[in-house]
Image: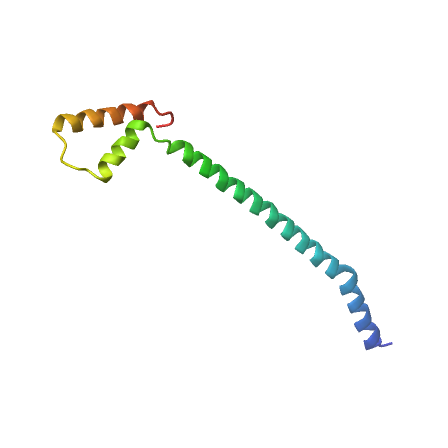
Length: 99
């Protein structure tokens, strides 16, 4: 006997509804949950990196003064003053942890 084409189509659509659609729904649910988790961890990584950079870029008073002097020098400094400031800057950088 030949199977009824309508029955075969109905069986195929029932199989699709019963098995494939829930599986697709589950995959979509896992994907959205995972993307939400990754978005949170990405934000946390960025926040941690910003905190780290803020700690690393902590400027000592002598470094701030050096940057001010570099930004707008009013007149050329004498050689002794340049050497003194560079040595002070070097000492302040050596005192900072992680450098």
